[in-house]
Image (cartoon, rainbow, N blue to C red):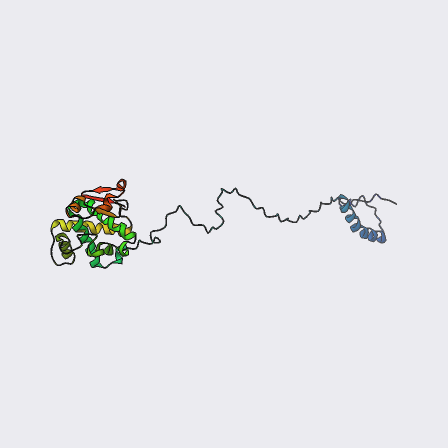
Length: 249
């Protein structure tokens, strides 16, 4: 068998190289073999390309990172309140005025009492008297509001709570709009009002460290009042402002 087949991809030979006489049957046979030889040749010289392997994407397991206890995980919501953060002013509940527990006229009588008791003691002396009234009120003494403290016993505790005291009467008439008052009374009235505003806001400074009692020893002696409680006091807690001694049992 002859395997020396012509290469179909080479240029065809010229008619000069071919035999002059080719039978029709041979030509037809050659024409039928040609496509088969071409395919065979192509398969022999063609390199088979490697198939690409399709790799399925693997789902990796979720990894939970454990943080140290001192690391704040900000991405997680928390129900704990923020302690070191200032709140907007609109959220802060304003202090409830304690003097609203009494009527305007009762408030005027408190102011008149303080002025009657301490107008000669200056601003610190009048503030200390207010501190004394507040201390008693906050401890529930005689009902627990400023007016009930100064009016208890019809002036037994605060001698100036009486229309017989000229400074008390002048101040009360001025606050009620009945009459004018001296410049000293007017100035003292405005000062006591400012202290009551601070008290309502919780900003009133306590000059007497909560002492429940006070007196003027010289006046008390002149009036012949009993000083047994005062003489038995703990003197280490005394606060002396002007002519008054503020003390505790």
